[in-house]
Amino acid sequence: MRALIVDDERHVREGIKLLADWEGNEITEIYEASNGEDAIQIIQSFNPEIIFSDMKMPKVDGTQLLKWMDEHYSEGKTIVVTGYDDYHYMRKAMHYGSSDYLLKPIDPEMLNDTLIRVVKEWKQEEKERKNKRSKNQLINKMKPAYRDQKLTQIINNDPVVKSVWEEFHLAKAQTYTIGLLQVSNVAIEQFNGDKDLTFFTLLNIINEQLSKNSNGIAFHYITRKGEIVLLLKKNKAESVFIINEIHTNIQNILGLTCTIAIGREVDSVTQLNLSYQHAKSIIMNRNVLRNRQERIVMENEEKEIKSLMAYASSIKIAIQTGELHAFQSLIGQIQTDLINNQHLTFRQLFHLENEYQMISARWHKEFNLPYSLSTDLEEQIYPFINKEDEFQLEAYKDRKKREIALFLKRVKRQNTRKSQNIIHEIEKYVKANFHREIKLQEISEHFYISREYISRKFKQEYHINISEYLISIRIKKAQELLKSSNLKVYDIANMIGYQDDKYFRKVFKKIVGVSPNEYREMKIDKIN
Figure 1 (tube, rainbow, N blue to C red):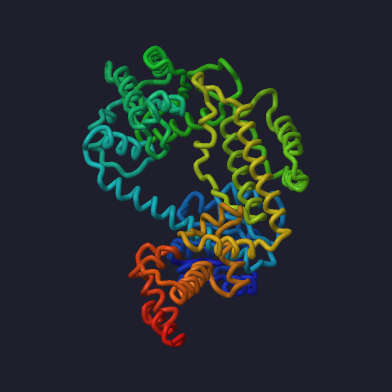
Figure 2: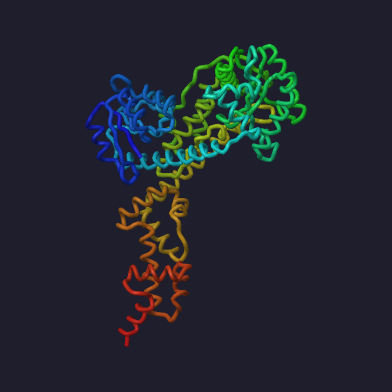
């Protein structure tokens, strides 16, 4: 793997190079840049996976670099390193996809903890990217997968031979209009959670209507997993009439109410992305709180996005109180400030959820609590959209309150245990359970502490890792049993946690220097 350090201060770059555990994270090449302009050239030439970046730099600053990466190099993982503890910078970093935000002077432990997590995230995402590429290679001309893939490429303005346009009868139309339908969780639940069956059924209903008079074609837009795109070879007025009929059919056949956004009319296949983006903007700017609003939407006013980061100090105070009522008051204040006249857009909602996830991750890390950062914002939001396609704000707030209550409960337990020597408690736990298989994850969940924290502190205290400590306990117990009993070796192996006595014999000889039988004979000879 490769890493890039971007900072206009040379001593900061040298500090990161010195403090980071590159070898332990399988990073073999390290590049440096003193500004965002040079960083972009290095990224284009060497494709580093991990990028450390300052925010204030000459020429191209950190915000501009993050924006460029968001648009051109989304595969890279960015860690912002800055001396500015300002929510404005933090908001910018999160907006453009930064994985974390570290303050100068850099804490070595926090730096390496962050590096380990970000490398792990990159590897998981790379695995997912490879799987996606492999699946795409298997796609052939079998419908509907081939249709979805090729039409998605056309919408994305990816290179597609013109014969594909002709295959889907797109080349000769005078005008085009895109309709966009967001498939809700309620629709999928109606088909017992089978997403493929849900899309298959909806697309059959829609394409049956569109096939009349060759009006167009609908497909699953695979870039966004929950969207169906209606590609109509009609002007906007005609498209509105056809989409109204489709909406009525879906409601009559499936009993589902759905919102369909209609993008601007365009006159070329190469401009379809403009129509799609317009329709997407309409969906994202739709007021999710307004009941009985129009289900066929053609325009929506774009509202200013407000940030949850403005409440960072209030969130900190609420956490310090350790009581849920402090958060209930804060949630009420946030709702009053951010939701004006019962108006909340999907765009604002997704932004709030993303910031909530980042803030949650930061505070779980602060208290060394295990936490899985959700990268699928749709999975956090769409379950609260009901059959009438309305967002259930109160249910969503209740879910957040339960999550916060669980967090506060874990913090209290953490603080209680911190008054004792938690590592000694873990050592006692290992001793008490040496006779069975013990996983680090089990210990983490039992003591509400992250695995990384346990491993690090245990080795600091006992100068040995947990697995080696467990082996030493088992071997000592085996030595006692070999000296004081006539039990068979395989019985002793089972008693101390080894199901395979051959493996036990191997471990015993490695630790003690002789086999279990030889050890027993030596002890018997000494007695005689």
